[in-house]
Length: 467
Image (cartoon, rainbow, N blue to C red; front, side, top):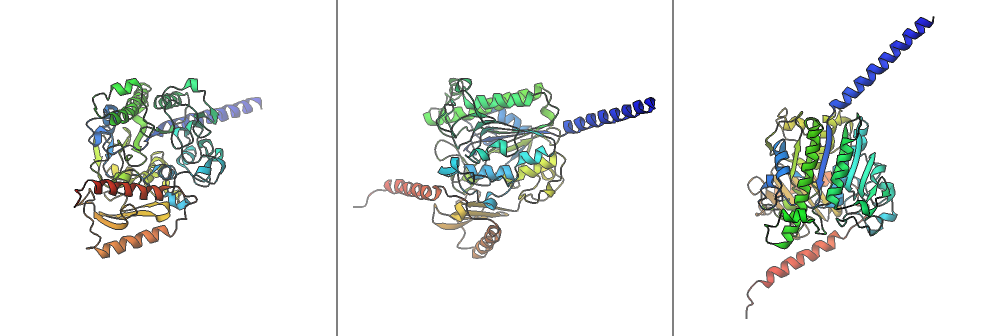
């Protein structure tokens, strides 16, 4: 009898051990995932998109190892809503997150991406991932909406929309936290470096689970601050403001190089997906959005088209440029697909997996129809195939562009193409019918009108006065 019990225990033990090894092996096969998000970085502020003044050798090299998206879009032209779309894989208008966080957000748990929305981190935890959010959050100032409440095991960063780079605390949302505990300022040096150091610690932590890291640098968002190391790397730029801005971008590049070197040293690089993108177009001052028209806040290409690449040696070929239209909304389903899950079960998602398209398995287009909505429709845009409709509050009219023949949006063809205008307006109304009104409002509308007024005054002032 004792022999039978012993044999049974031995069999059970062996089965448990075998299942454990199998689970660990399965987890190791899932790719690690790192999303590197920059803040207000211009299209042409990286070498792989044509920058000649800002040194970005690491980003350029890594981009070449994978796929550069030459038509990659953010889902919104400015910070908080764009991040809400990226992290949920849904148009942020679906849940009323059209605006930057309102002033009462720190006291109001309803201002921010609601807990009812499923974030990438939550979906990947279901697939066996350990998760980390590092850097700028800006998806809710109230503690109930912090990353640790939204699927992240680990958090190192600040809740608000911007912060000085030295880590000096000014209030609750401009404080660096580690898992909701304030980090002593004596432990902080320069946030771009600090965020990287934290990411490397998470990467190298002894754990059998694959990891997902959302690394949201606040660079190159204002305030314009840099260390001597990075300023030395941009001393060739003779315009002071651009030189400092470039140093902030260079700091990101140097630190991404550090992360990449860590992955190589730990033999993790081949099975790690690295995605790099900006949250929206570059800011109006100092960033370079050329050749695109406009900047952050606008729904011209310069406000929504962003530097964007993805690498994964085990899953994607290198040295590719993918020219079909893709969106930050596609990242959520792409990551689930890469992890071996059926992203179609997440019925709420508005994007699709990019893997079959980038691999050439699907010769179609991942997105033939994309939408943008700002402040409940104060401004909106629709891209359908090659045509883009833009209802612009800046210009006070609805414009139509053929992006195939006019990628720079120089020629408004709305008046000569009323049928196309009508079709795209109907597409927008149909899409917007299942959205909800903004849950709060930001000052974007009045800022837009002020900006356009100054713009027109400067142009008018340049004219010769008629006597």
